[in-house]
Length: 230
Image (cartoon, rainbow, N blue to C red):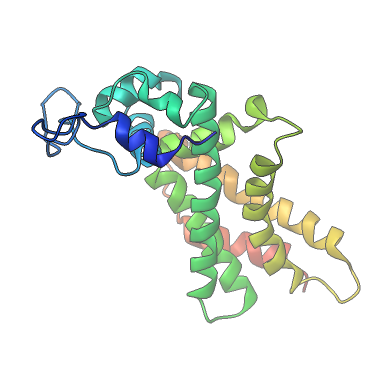
């Protein structure tokens, strides 16, 4: 899936020493949503960054490879050095989203020295904050996972499982001894269902439309306390 970095670098530079390297001009704002042309030491990363920016600005449904190329300042042939096509780029974005969310949840857990209910509440809030700060990525990760799912895509499946495992591992400390991982998974699904629903309602403006003042942290805390075993 990834091209040879050396050959990619050669392809982006002019052959003679008296010519300026192609795409090596500094990044500049053009006023039309595009960046100035510049050299990419990490072409794949630049395309992913451009795709994330477009998704947050225009929504996942309006992402196209040509938009990514214009924003990154590269030719329309450039993505194919690293991605088979748009779906392959989307796959990378979904995996990055899972990894980002898992990192945020671990940081929230590790930054909360309180009891387990407080740690899970902090993790839940980090989930909601991820959704509100990255609405495009949130909708992409959870809105396209099913249609992009390939049972043989072990890497994609592992990213999603690793993200959810962060919550399962924490919940496992709250279930009775001997209850087994199935009990922890069941409880984690209930907590996730509540937090994901709250995140979606907040993101879509449903609380505002209902003219309801909602304290999300208090709500997540109360739900966590009630769902965890006494």
